[in-house]
Amino acid sequence: MSELTGLSERQIRYYEERKLIFPDRSKGRNRKYSFSDVEALMDIANKMEDGFQTLEIRRERLKEQKKVEQEELRKKMIQGQLNAQFGFRGK
Image 1 (cartoon, rainbow, N blue to C red):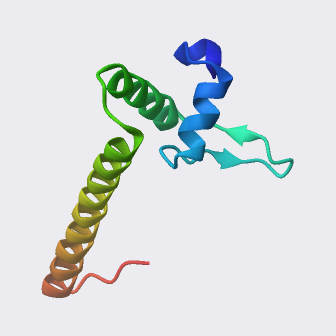
Image 2 (image 1 turned 60 degrees about the horizontal axis):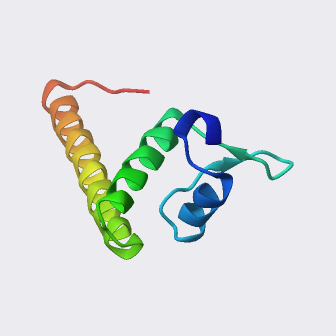
C-alpha cells in the first residue's frame, strides 16, 4: 500500500488510528485494502497537505458516508414503492 499511495506505513497506520480508514482484516489480522481505501488514503493525504486536521477530515468523511447511506435507503424505498405499485415480489 505504501508503494501504491506514496505514503509511509506509519502514515497509513496513523490514519487508521485516527479512524479515517477502516481496512478489512484477514483471519491472520493482516490489513486488506480495497480500491476505495486507496482513494480514501490519497484524499486524506491531500487534505492533510492542505492543512486540514484529522478531526475535520473524519467529520467530512462521516457526512459523506451518511449521504451515501441516505441515498441507498431512498433508492430502496422507491424500489419498494414501485414493487408494491406493480405487484412485483422480489427474492
